[in-house]
Image 1 (spheres, rainbow, N blue to C red):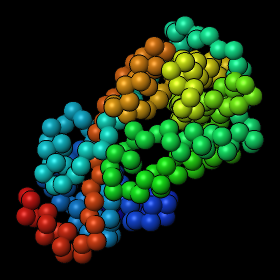
Image 2: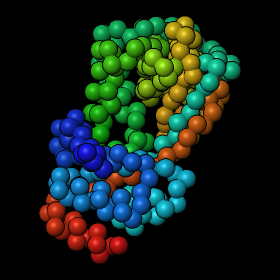
Image 3: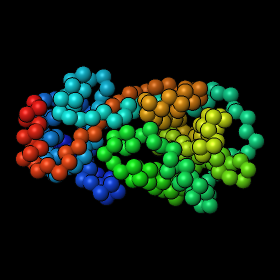
Length: 258
């Protein structure tokens, strides 16, 4: 019987960033499994490894830090179980509508600068322009069918913000991206868009509704809490860079750290 590899090469990420990128399959580490994982990375000539760790496992955290894994994000998953928003709807004199093809340029412009608290910017190893472009691609694909719904807040005939919605047959709904134009921030539009998304999911009989955000994104966390979301899980995102070392050099470096 063939044993599953401890990691998985990510073709899309590798092509997009121009580096050989992989992710670890497990959420926990042991002294044996981390050796296997790093040996696999060396054999596959991985340049950057993503590792999503169980934040409650001190052995895993200690091993990751001992082997030069760098924490780049606190991944917080929140859940609204009953699909109700439990929040006061902010006053808004514009209109809420579905996104259309004509909105894509404006939404891409918002996405280009609106997600700089994410792990790809925080890491510092990815070119800033590629990290910005990642979210442009994401919202463009969302408007082309990747998301089941894209809701836009429009004011003065212009898109001011957006939220993307995904339906999962047995797991309810998932909020994807939430973006606001810079001059539209601080007006309650983020909360309004989350309320609209919850009503959209309710109309599609989708619950619970889940969303993932960064632990450092205090504004987003407050909005979700106001709208009835509770923390479901907290995980730590690590990146391990191997630069251009040869497989033998990578293994030698980690043996010295062990």
